Length: 254
Length: 66
Image (cartoon, rainbow over all chains, first blue to last red; front, side, top):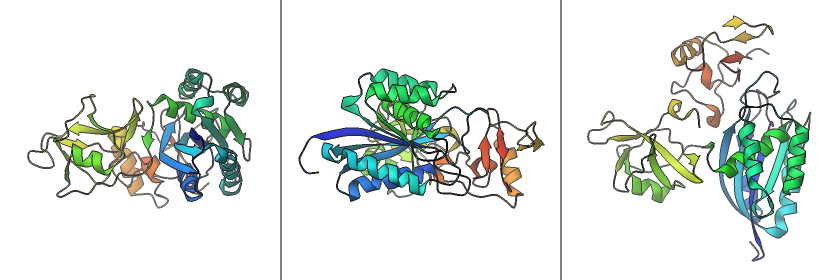
């Protein structure tokens, strides 16, 4: 970055795919990579946020929004929005209804309203008009880039859920170097973005605790931190190793 | 699979019927691996990991062939 004012932002997109195209997560990752490639700032991991599944909501398949955080040079904000807008217009799949949300932490006047919108989008049918009105009054960029533009609802909701710090799982599998599928909590923390290794019951594990690391390792967002959930496997996979990383099915509801 | 009121092929089980979803996918020639972030079943070949599923409130609709 050029040394100017740094902005903390959230970028969220929704409804960019169809049954044949790359997923919305792929596009979100590409945008996050572009932020760093163009020297605009640094990106944080992409998170997936599940929204309401209902017959009256025209989602493609999963109705999930994809969001990432970033710290960027304030002077680059307009460039980022322009790039993301063009990218969604060009890369979103035929028949999709893409929406883009870019929210600057310092400019959101009432973050609790954005969070509440996101939480409601998990159990209610919301309208585009409400999304645009909320974005306007909270100083948030919200735009549509094809089709009906219904994706603006999910894009805004996803930003709210990410801001809540208590929703979603990280896109991608964590890469952890270890021997015999075993690593201590401390080793996991040192190698990944994970802030805390925590049992499904909420207990924080000590740094010297050994963990059985399965092939598929996924972090979730909880209390504003990247959490690696583990469960008590009681030596099932390796003698003396009492904790194991969670399975896909265990993390379905994050 | 059932044919629902919209004429779609809908899984007759629930979102917790992991075994049935895996058995169906095992015999399905249209199975297509979904993107990583949307896969939820531990059994790789499962309707719950298939790109052609579309979630409903209680189950999913199979969109293969559409």
